Length: 264
Image (cartoon, rainbow, N blue to C red; front, side, top):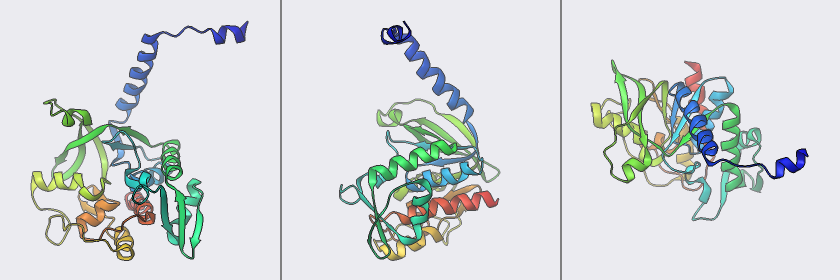
């Protein structure tokens, strides 16, 4: 009887709808106040979230797109293989991504496995990822960033005039990639007050993989009170070159920004 009843279970569309709305709302309300808010669920953002959550920090990642992973899905020119250097392999080993040695110092991974494993590992560590949410402004009190102003990505895409909501965080990480969206919002709203040579974004330099992979970690640091940059946003802000389709620096940058915040 039990097996037969299970096969013929009736489904109620309203119950399904309630489950989605109630469970999402419960999570969203819980994560409107966090230890760390990361903007951008690319490889750097998810790696940072993973290492922070491992240390029991409350972490939310806000991603404006439907999918996570940034440009990692496509490898290089839509050939879905990722390249990593030796120094970043320990992170891949830790989260369980299989690697293949191409030649000395170079490893490849399946890009789909890499993104999906990184995402799953971060979530299982305690990170909560909210996709389809854009950051349109920041909250600043006494020259310190205290939170983010959020809206559905569809609102801006449809050019609708809909007011946003806010989320509070002790620390913010801009992991939005080449555009460094959060840092640009800060300079647009309060002027050139960044911790750079000019107080403004220095801009991303032309591709140079060797130097870019080095500087992306060096440039992963605080750029304004309570605001850090990681991933390509770090090189865009502090003037490092892009590195193209090699992703080790992204993981190392995410790990580094987590270490910096944990040290606080």
